[in-house]
Structures are given as structure tokens and as C-alpha cells.
Image (cartoon, rainbow, N blue to C red; front, top):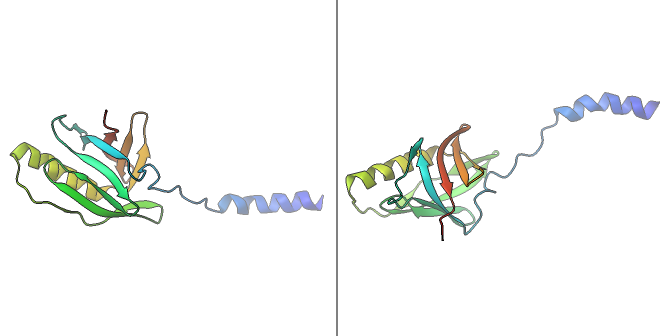
Length: 137
């Protein structure tokens, strides 16, 4: 009787313990490139070259529509944290520059990545701000 009573008394305490958060970097496998297909609910034209690659542990890189970029990335308190972007500074036609600016803005907000049926969703405060798929080929 005593072991059962002890277990019943400890059950509420066990329920209050927090479970460890999943690794927010897990969907971004090192060496895997993603093609950004949507930014802020708008589709990215197929002609735009917007990619995301976890080049190595602690680093993301890719193309942002016109230029190449890289940034440090890490998990902090169960969320994804992307540091300051660095990149090339080429000028491109206005439509490409608009896509690039939208990408940089959205990427600066990203705090999580979730796998989806056809790729990944990059999220900010639980809202999808970008979507990506693996490039064909």
C-alpha cells in the first residue's frame, strides 16, 4: 500500500517537470541545401536564387536573391538564433533586390525550423515566415 501511495503523491510532481526541448537546429542538417519557395506568404519566383545551407556546425550560408550571405547560427533556450548576416554587396535589378531585402528581414526574425510534408517552415514566434524545399536534381 505504501509504494502505491508514494507513487500517487509523486505523480503531480513528475507532471510539473519540464521535458527537454527538441534541438531547434535538427531540421537544418549540416551540408543540406534548401531552396526558399515562399517569404512572408508570397511565392519566390523560380528565377530567384534564394537558398539556405547549414554549411557547418554553427554557420548558415547561401544566396539571397542577388548576393551570397553567411551568418552564425545556434540554439539558445530551445530556440534558433541567427546572428548578424555578412555577405557580398553586388547590385542587381530592383526585383531581385526586393526579394533579397524581404529574405534578410524574414531571416532576421527566424527562431525555429519545423519539418513539413514537402520541406521546412522557418518560423518566428510560431508563425511561418518562410518555406523551403530541397532543390530538384
